[in-house]
Length: 144
Image 1 (cartoon, rainbow, N blue to C red):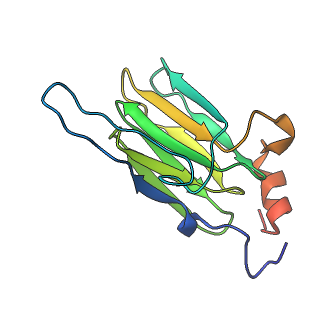
Image 2 (tube, rainbow, N blue to C red; image 1 turned 90 degrees about the vertical axis):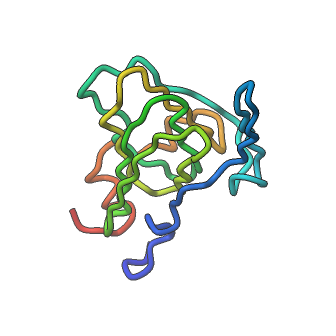
C-alpha cells in the first residue's frame, strides 16, 4: 500500500444520522442498507453488560465496513488509521458511527447499562481481522 495515500482514513469515518420518527407512544428508528449506510449489512451483533473500566475492540478489519450504534447508554470509540486518530462519543440511538475498513478501533468508557449494536457488511471471518497493532501498522505501510 502507498505510504503517501492510505486506502482509508479516519476522515472517511463519520456520524450517520438515522431516520427518527417521533411519536408520543415512543420513537422509531430504522436502517436500510445502501440507503442510510454506505453498505449492505449481513450481520448484526451487540455488546452489553460491559463491566466498568473494560475496553472492547482493539482490532481493525481488512475489508469489513461497520456501523456502530449506542442503542442505550453511552461509550467512546477511538479510531486510528495509523496516521491520525479521532474519538467519538456515542450516546443517541439515532446516530451511528460509520467505520470503514483498515481503521483500528477501541471502545471504552461504557456507561452502566449501555448496549452497543454493530451492523457489519459481512459475516464473521477471523481472517479479516488485524488483532495486533504492530501488524496492522505494518500492513498499511505506517511506522509503529
